[in-house]
Length: 261
Image (cartoon, rainbow, N blue to C red; front, side, top):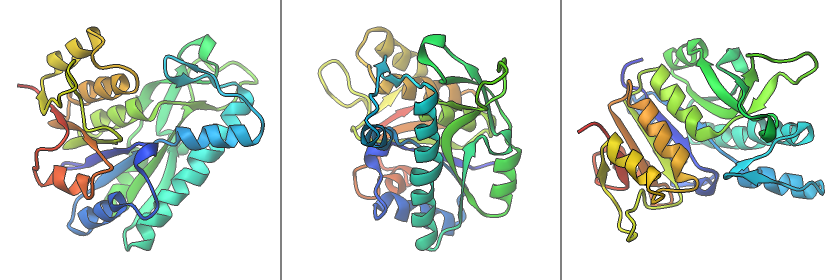
């Protein structure tokens, strides 16, 4: 699977007529192999609100009880995933929607009892990804996983997971050529708000340790560093810019690139 590009689409950057989808289809039609990982947290919150259910976050992550897990699974593996797959296929691409549960792709255990059914990834089985890529499909992966490790009797077989570390683990497992995060910010900034075009892994860790990089940027940075064990280049870019994905692949200097010096 040499040359595979892993793309993480943040929920705030996606729309069914978005240039992101055009870029994905164009890259596939030019022979690039892609794996797409998506989020969808805002839509989960919307659907929980429709049901009169409250949402609680700890350190930026959703506490997931049993009823919340049902909504998470339905929204991520159903609504969001199929919307992205339909958009790609309608533009002439070839995509298949899956989740981390399918083919035991992502195997997890409970990360913290206080977070409920939120998992930490233990293993990625790449067999399903390989089969889809070898048959010229783009796997579009929803961030729920198989509760495969230390699962007690009566517990659900699914866990909610953060899409950012999922993208990093997949990139590492398949030795991806690149990992690209499409976000709703310009990239990683310094303490003065100035964009940092390039960072080493140590520089990125220092920004996290100093509290300069915070919130949702932290799991993205950790995912990039994890992916760099096998992946040459990782990028965090503004997916709201027209054709940002193509620009990044073509070598335009946008966003922040994290790579070994």
